[in-house]
Length: 225
Image (cartoon, rainbow, N blue to C red; front, side):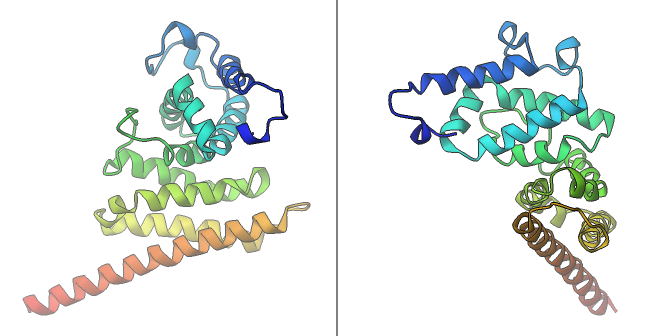
């Protein structure tokens, strides 16, 4: 939904009100305290509700006008709180969508719960890839969002221990294999192909990083001998 798509005569304020209404539906008391909180009854986790909400916010965040509304109305703060809760519960839903949403949040304006160099962020991303095959059944379009999130913070993987990078690559490869081991009836072929291409590209790059690291270790060993 964009301002340009509104029928003539309809005030764009309706979309502003819709943004507020969406947040109120999932977080009724948000207007009482706009600060980010990580506990309390208003942050209670509801997997189905928060998955639908995160999926919607990820889609809307890709539109410039909606991005402004989401930032202004407190949706990104809500997503940050949900990510904290999802991380503590080790749930795979809606973590994949939240990882994608974070690629649209400017760290200067919001205190992200995960720094690119933190082991916590790496664990969060790895946790999503370990369960990525489940998105075949729920929403395969979430996988490209997870790929973008992984790529955006790829600098942290470059500085990771070899075993951490290898573990991530293994999990991405597992997701890649699931494309050929499951049959999902009624799936949009274009979405399937786009997700497959995205995951394949990430796996190829991660595999290349491992090969380069191994080559570097070999060269260093030769110099020391």
